[in-house]
Length: 367
Image (cartoon, rainbow, N blue to C red):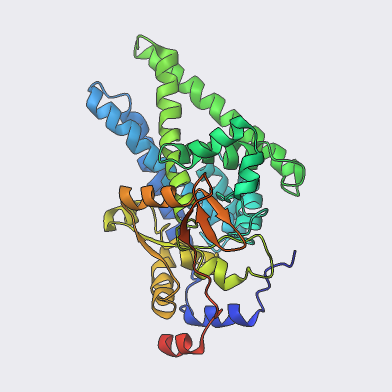
């Protein structure tokens, strides 16, 4: 497998479209965003113990949102873009990941070194790679059933839980494990210690508040918000690289930087308030083109890409219908014809394969 080479001419042309100041990371901004998200996490966690059931239920859901916000902070820190300091990024990233139950070193391997390096390349990218019809038919009954569930609206969170979190990060195969085994083992111990301490603290608090079923309430307060977060991550993982017009590859000769990171990454358009809460995560094409752009600097770069490569960037207006349509069309894939199939092997959509990797006209328009 050839690595992605930053010196490739197409990559230099694409980078020339982006603002020159895009990598301007700031210590105060990065740490400040972490502290804001941590505060919201703490407030919603405390609100789950409110006397009014409606308020407690609202805070359970809101706490899941704040876990996602902390994850996005940790995600940026893991890329080294949140602040200018490598050590601050490593410390803040680990702290931000704790409520998400994610391993810093495990995420760096599965996300940075696999998903980003080989986006939409089957066998390397762990983010919802589709089976062929022949592969699907050869799976066991249980695995076929699981795949059918994964490609439903409720099932996308289950995919993230099993395939990306449990198999990809917590208990990866020897080949998929991070290179620094000691660091990985310490990260895993840290996360499981955090889960145990959180459960113990919540259980003690429910006992002190005289809840009737403290064990059940502990599970509710700890794992229901986490499952809200898991569903959000499943949605992001699916929707940002799976679309009826976006191609997947199993042939290295067809796959390239432009097709993967520009044409193979959707720009999911959300209402302004959701964009704010989710810290620009949906400006995802710019992040894929240059992961060193801090999350608070993504918007100008995404705008530049949308203008330069408007024919090839898929802008998805997020609605329940668009998500349902993606899941309806994108079940299996024919890698030779670049067609999406249903589970019976019937064609549902034809993916687009951009021919030009980067155009000088785009550079002129951007200039």
